[in-house]
Length: 130
Image (cartoon, rainbow, N blue to C red; front, side):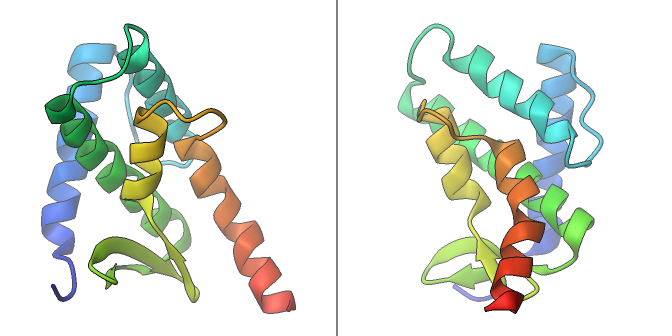
């Protein structure tokens, strides 16, 4: 698979920003706090029940790319491929924003894109302490 093309992932993230603004009225600015708004959009999408497979796939791609870009802009790092999955690597920590988006959009309780991003500094610190 190789190294993911950041320009492609940034383009998908930008599409997320446009769709969320046009269809849900939230302005996503690539800040960690903006993920709270994207979590709200995910809740709205699920309000009428589970998403069909096509819509779930689309929104997982949009939310995953946006969440990953937010994390990389906030904490540094890069997009990587890990065992066939697109991931982010920040200070030796590997994270899976697309998998987190899938869990959020699948309706898993207590899952949050904002929490995913906010946990990164604590996880890095914990890793360094051990």
